[in-house]
Length: 173
Image 1 (cartoon, one colour):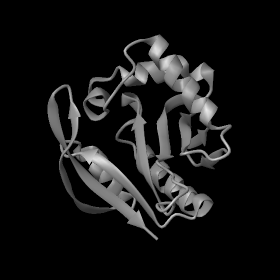
Image 2 (image 1 turned 180 degrees about the vertical axis):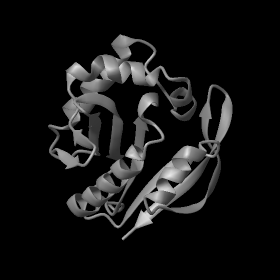
Image 3 (image 1 turned 45 degrees about the horizontal axis):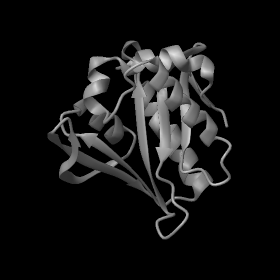
C-alpha cells in the first residue's frame, strides 16, 4: 500500500532503507523516546527484515510505512497492536522522523493520513498513542491531528531501571 499526499509519500519499507533506518535511530532525542533502538547495523537489519516480512502475513498485527520526502527516507509511521479477537476495534499509532525533517508539519500530516487510512481499512473505533510525558513536540503533533489527551499512565514503562510515565492520547470514531 502506498499513500501519497502533498510533500511526502508513505510506502512500504525496503532493505535499501537500512542505512537511513539505522542512522535515524542513533539520534539522541529518538533514543530518549523509544524503548529499544538497534545497537548496530545487524540489529537494524533484523528489525527491518521483520517489518518487511510482516507485509506478507495474512493477519498482520499492524501496518508500517516509510515516510519518504523527495525520494529520501525521512522516518516511519505505523499502526500496531491490531487484534482479531475481543479488542479488534482498536490499535496503536507510533511514528518517528529524522531530525532534519522535524518541525515542518510532516508528522502531523502523516498521523492524519494514517489515522484516516486505519479507521477505514481496519474498521477501527479507536486509535491510541502513548507518549513520554517529557515529549511535548509529539503531544502537540497528536493534538493538532485531532487526538484527545486522556490521562497519564504512571510508571508505565521501565527503561534501564528508570520508570517512565506515558501520556495517553486517542482518536475515536
